[in-house]
Image (cartoon, rainbow, N blue to C red; front, side, top):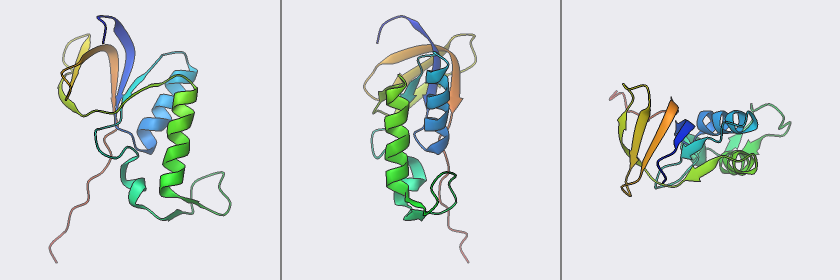
Length: 123
């Protein structure tokens, strides 16, 4: 990564992360999206049919929906990084994000879209 200061970094590759990337890229913000080092796409990657997403009358498989969103974000110019964020400094005016490969990205703004985590309630 260069020393340039990016407009926007998005951490997370679920529906919220990719939607943010699509809109930011269309607004010419040249977003960077950290997808994570495992499977990009969030919890929908483990979902079979998504029947309530607008525009898909007959539903769509979760992984297919996420693949479509990823491709759309990339098509509009989002930079996709397949790595984990390991450290963030969000206190300063310029935010600093470090990834698992040792790269650092500086940005004016960061969107945290890390999604949900499943938890058992123990009953």
